[in-house]
Length: 128
Length: 146
Length: 286
Image 1 (cartoon, chains in turn orange, purple, red):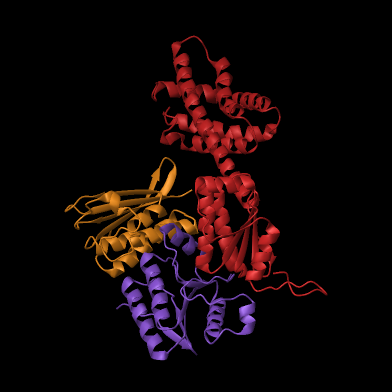
Image 2 (cartoon, rainbow over the protein chains, first blue to last red):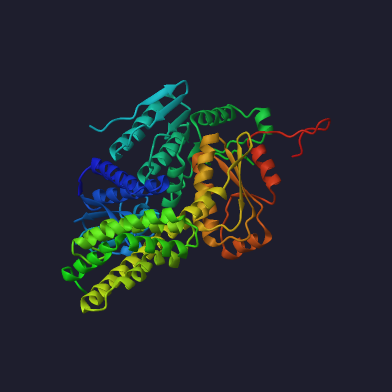
């Protein structure tokens, strides 16, 4: 588990994601996509969630190997999850591509959030 | 603590080569430093070499677009060079098209782009006008030019 | 299920007393069932190892095919199935190698006391389990083979060629699916970097049809190339494909499309600053 409490947390999240992606023998493009998604989500955790954690693991399900990253924060949460996943929607100063963009970069994307209860985003990228 | 990316000056051109994984603060610093240097040196071109960069997320992407627009306001052209294929594919998937940013495959090609636009700004010569090149400030490089 | 104890002891006895004969008989049967496609000595070597491993496992008193004691047996079976799968034997032929051991053992049973029958029944259960394991290992190998072949096909079917200095071409032939389009996309973008080409022509004359996903991938390739500082031209769009693209409402935007590869090449060359002249004639057709 990695704490994301400052800017260097985002950098470390990228490094951890890359190491796991390489261990899982993802192709270069798939690695890049995963690391980019990790970067977006770690920044979200820091900026909108007021800091949080990233839990990273290699998973093995039904004969497929993959990398799973879980980003959790205890921030204000997202009132409308569907809206938050729309391109261009932003609550802050970003471009509004963080959530919707990262969703396109990975295979599985689960967003759990409620106002006042923080936000948890789980992403998985499967090897081929 | 946060490292600063060096901005090199070669004649009228400022060159930035990003070699490490930058944190967000370093990216903001770079944007400020570059803007200050453009004003301070009166440079008319900026080359940002990202050939060593392994990922460009929306934060860095926005920085590139902002530098391009800022430099235009300050009468300088920005060219981003050396983007890796994996990075380009990821940016497209992410939904960033970096509108307004000129790009080139290599540093050398980037310098040529700047040279062309300099010649054009100093008054389009007959020869270039005939070869179909036109100046399209604010629009990304279109080698076809027609 | 007879777990350990007497059953296995009797089995070990049965299998050891006439071990040589049984082993030879087994090898004979298997080599006959394989129709001589694997040499007798090869079969004997494979089965000999298996026979020894099986005995060792039984001596521990275990009859659990998935247990620790049978690790060595399973490893040998995996290897056997893999080599059979690669040599093109059928799953039945592969599994028979193991099942025939039951037939070999049958004649040595002495019918006098019930112990032999119970031991034999336990043994057949074990062999069945191992047989299933063999078939699974077999199909895994086949799947690997198919996967590897599909990958090779991808490699083969997506050449990137140099058309001119600074212009590369990607002639696509055959049905494009999402995976293949993605491979082409990556390969072409890498070729742009490797050759320092600022122009690429994607020719889809040989592509019978495209669906939305493939069209989207092509579009993304073009946008990605632009991000890197290169331009793509798409040529050879057949009337049917043009109709599909319009019907699907896919916006090709400002992407340059040309009817033929020749037109696209001319466009790419002009864009990279090449001028055309006819010998003795006036300067280039514009």
